[in-house]
Length: 133
Image (cartoon, rainbow, N blue to C red):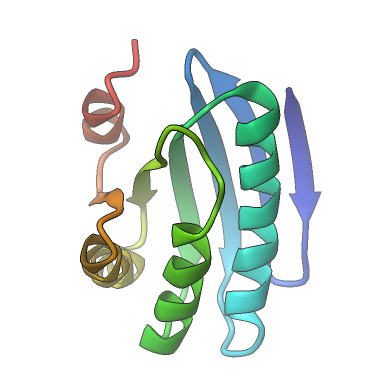
């Protein structure tokens, strides 16, 4: 299982490492369609998790640019409704300091929805949290 998908503002690819779906994203955020394009990516992540019986997701983000709070709310709302069993465990590593701040905001929104979601600035720390081998 591996794929590369490109969109108008980013590209992402994913593969399985042990019991974790690892998603790498690259690109530049603009201020239009960020939420809808992220939700499209999450539809694919949800499908891959269902097909492969995975519930842990590691996103390695090399996205540049800011994520508006309204986009964060929309994206987290969609993710919270994904049918990933038994429960989604999500770690996002942001390489850009501004993007990291935005992901921390999304983490706070997700925690209010009782989601298991952590933002990291280190891939090693994220993998340790997910208990990846």
